[in-house]
Length: 277
Image (tube, rainbow, N blue to C red; front, top):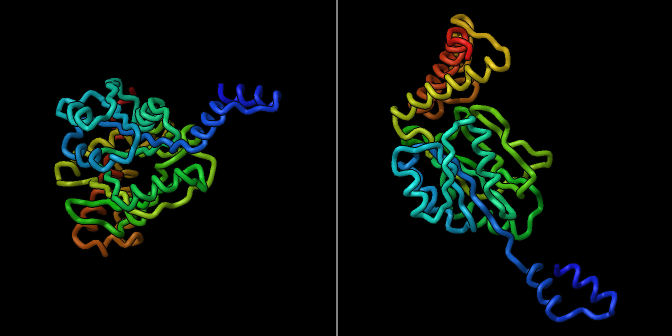
C-alpha cells in the first residue's frame, strides 16, 4: 500500500508525509528472528534451551506427542506449541517448524542445544547487516558430562541460521541435513550441545538411530547382514578412535568410538533381519 501511494505521489510531484513516514518505518524496522524446534519428551533440557532464546521474536515448538512436561514448559516460556503426533521423520518434522514461522530469519535448533551469549549477540548483529543468506554455527557437544574436541565431533560447523525461504531440511528419517544453494558463512560464539548426558541416553539413541538408519537404507534398496554389520562396525571404531583422534578425548573418546561402532553394527544387522514394512 505504501509503495502504491508513493508512486502516485511521485507522479503528482508530491510525496505525502504519511507515506514518507511509513516508508521510513519500513526501512528502519528491525529484522525479525524466529526459532524452530521439534520436541518429544524433552522436558529435561527444554527450559535451558528456551531460557537462552530471549533475543528471538518468535519461538515455535512442534511437539510429537510428549507425555512429560515438554508442552507445559514450552508454553510457560512463551513458545507457540503445535502438536503433530504422526511422526514423518526428523527432516519432515523440522520442515513443519519452518513452515510455522513468518519471521525474516529462522534459527533451527534441537532441544538439547543452548545458544551462548556470544552467539546470541552475533546472531542479532548479523541479521541487521547480513553478508550471506545462510550462517553456520560453531557447535560444541558433550558426552556424559565431558566436552568433546576430537572423535569427529569437533570442529562441527552446522548451518542453522538462514533467511526464511532460502533453506529446507532433507526428508531423511534420521541425520537430516539443511539444504541450500548459497555459500554459508561462519558466526563467532558457541552453540552448546548437551547430546548424551548419561548412559541411558546413549543406549536409547543407539537403538533409535540404528533402527531409523536401517529403515532409511532399506528404502534406498540397500542390504545388510551379519558380515557387513561386523565389517562396517569395526571400521566405524577405527575411523572414530584412530583417524579422527578419539583417543585424545580419553575415556569419553573410547566410549564414543564404541557407540559409533555399535550403532553401525546394529544398523546393518537390522537391515539384514528386520522384515520389510
